[in-house]
Amino acid sequence: MAEETYLSTPELSPLEQEVLDEYERLASNMKQLAVLLDRLASNPTTDILDGLRDLERKTSMAFTLLKASVYSIVLQQEIDWGEGAGAGAGQQGRGGGGAAASTSSAVGSDYEQ
Image 1 (spheres, rainbow, N blue to C red):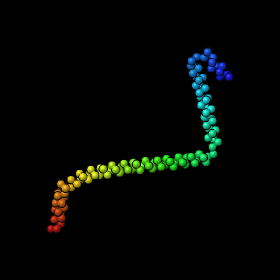
Image 2 (cartoon, helix red, strand yellow):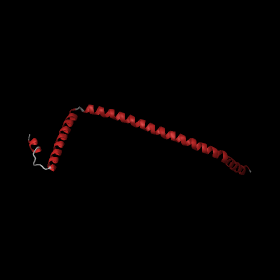
Image 3 (cartoon, one colour):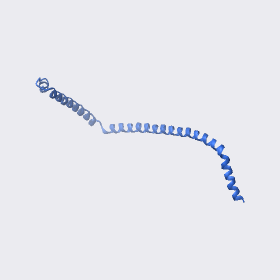
Image 4 (cartoon, helix red, strand yellow):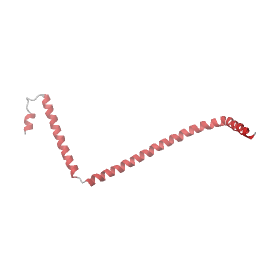
């Protein structure tokens, strides 16, 4: 009842009224926090631990799926890049293969003599 008296008093400046309103909201939030903490304190720890284990299992599964997805993407990129590099290397091998073969035959001929 005292709250109603000073909140409705016209002698308060707007700043004072604003401060009182903020204190009122703070008190309400603190009451809600106290109720929530009481509810959490009344729960047995086994329920909380079971919930945390379930959360850990789900998080672990999501992490594993994420790793598998990333691995799949990286592997597919390597395959794609490998095909591009393989096609380029095949063309170079055809054009430059004669030079490599002649070099190895020249080296071989040095040893044969």
